[in-house]
Length: 288
Image (cartoon, rainbow, N blue to C red):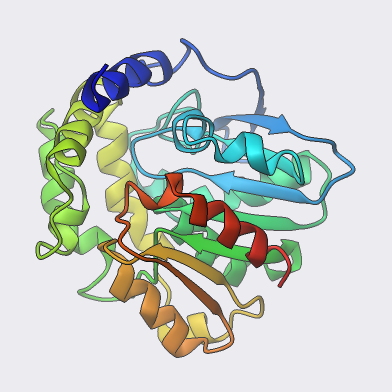
């Protein structure tokens, strides 16, 4: 079976429009604004709690179960895997105001719901931007922060929401979109497979209006340089050398020199998370 066919099969299992087929067992909780959020838990509750936040247009299983990351980490940590609002089994509002900082608040309320005073917050891609914002808004709930496959979303004309506006408009027109990296860093080719993968999942296996709202609401994930500098929990950053967010990740290190930057050589946004180095770096970050 070719990689492309295998990926398509996995997508059909884990990413049906409502996300019910082949999904891990889990529970729901309702946030303070009435949004229903799905989450799963793995590993002993006596272990250090780690929240794994997935990326754009996927879900907790596809980002963390298929990659094998979740099963490995749950041997050492109590792993909590939510579906972000707008994704998977969680509710999918269509208003931009229901995303951004509201997605960050969901993680805080999930911790409260599970009665954990604080946890390690680890996010990949969109999840990484959420994790970084979390560390600034909720320092009292932050044990440590891992920003993976992501960087700093700056306030102003370079914000993700502004750069990705063409993608939001395409989703509103019910068109699939290529990898968001093509809008952010055209110099780095995501590859043919990644292109078709994202076109497929955004057009057929997601709610396009919810995804458009996620993009438009992402202004709520931006940080000023001063806000980033005020982050008390220095992030551990894991990034592929060929990731389009690489330069954005370097900016975090420039403003927070005490942060730990771990670069996976020769890997891009899609391949870094499945590399052996990823888990090695993750475990090193947990000892900071």
